[in-house]
Image (cartoon, rainbow, N blue to C red; front, side, top):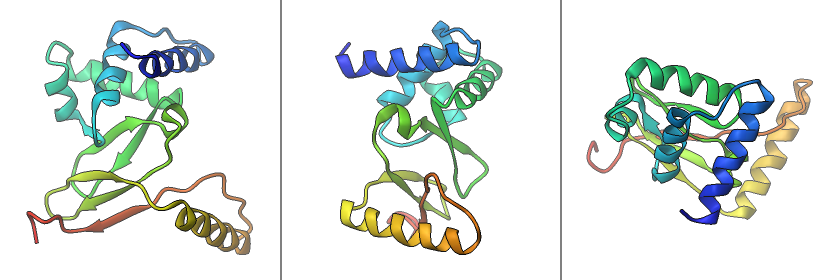
Length: 148
């Protein structure tokens, strides 16, 4: 196992401890599956990746990991929410592009210059409404090449 993966597990364990929870083998397996993924995973995806885990265990542990700030929930355009390691855990801020037809969700990175412009413009918009933003999420919605 590489050092980066160990750091993800160490951070997950610490975050869970903060809210009074243990880093169990099922939670470790979920983190492993999410860390290995190239895109956010749905419950069916996670069930395929963890065939010995029950659906209720996956849901329960995802809730705990989300509450601990380890996992982020990504709402797609279909009936399935998807899950990924939180940006704070991975140290990688990114956005998503999703197909409104088949529900596919992919991670996308935007150039740093555009990200900075986006932060500036969004902060100005929020300020006009009396808000101070702490972060943003950007989801692009369209049709993938298979559904066009």
